[in-house]
Image (cartoon, rainbow, N blue to C red):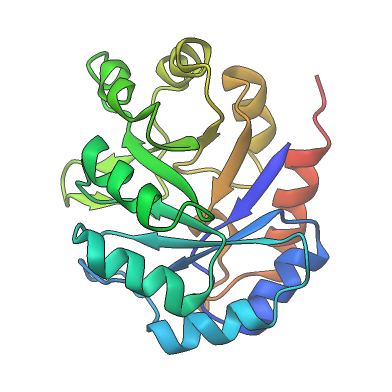
Length: 217
């Protein structure tokens, strides 16, 4: 089971996640809402420079301007871009053509049955899909700490025939159940690995990664 830890905003948290077995770390750059998890491009680049080999660095962005996304990805030096905004399949294809050596993930918001069809257009343009929760009351996307209907997520996993990551309200206590219910390619957590400081909790991070990679049926 692949594990991505998102909302990394310190080199210490990044290296702690890697130490406990994370396969990827997510860096939120390109602020479009009031989340405290966003960092500037210079600091993101610094964090990436400290990562060891074989740990993927993911530029998570709400931006939709293709040129800006490409420029930031190249500056930061990431291996992957996660499109969390309203980028279209054509946008994703343009980004792929400009930087074919960087992997692309498109996030989809699992709200209802209609959500299943929303990702089909992206399947030929991206390398993976990430299923997340949107807070309909605040319009917050990602980092909501809220789960969604895992039955719908399982249906998407079965239909897409593309690596699918599950996110949205995952934490050390529910990640095992979520994996068994959805059967995703990987899982992604942000708020479920945080401590009271707003940075990552050593205990939660260790438990989340351990529980994700050691499934008890």
